[in-house]
Length: 220
Image 1 (spheres, rainbow, N blue to C red):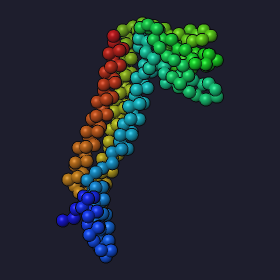
Image 2 (tube, rainbow, N blue to C red):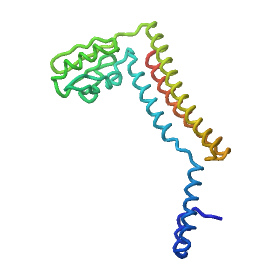
Image 3 (spheres, rainbow, N blue to C red):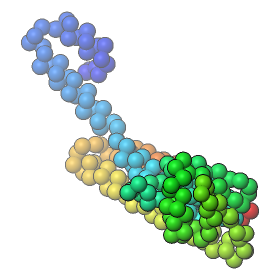
Image 4 (tube, rainbow, N blue to C red):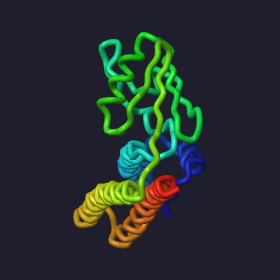
């Protein structure tokens, strides 16, 4: 039986003559091939999953509720210093009370730039600026507006689910192709399918949790 344990391989190498080197090399290549067959690289799925979650997080944050939450503006792009920069890199953002945000730039010269970015956004709020900072007051939401926001939230969640399913289908096709080409045995194909679904379920649950928290915030 060929052993893939590194300690055994080293012992074999010390005891072998130079003529045995080719055999050891074949054993090493065999071990590498077994490792490749037994494992599927899901790193691309995890990377794409993070991208989908980050995009959904930004979309969720853009849905204005009646509560003052720094998250709703921290990723707002501000045209300043000749480039577009996320607001959180230009200013301190805090909640004065349940319905008021205070934005204090580290450089007061960008107050007007921040004010313009807020007005041009889809936040639907009117900022009040002075020489040093900007205040944003959140108007109370009507019942109809709350329902409309929940509907928008559900649509954004479904878009993220679709993106996730598309990524799942691409990886499943790759696994099937590898099995057809003899790169992996059939039983490993179904093992990888199960592992794929576990990864998808985990990402999907995280999306659901974000949506649930946002809906509670909208309706409270």
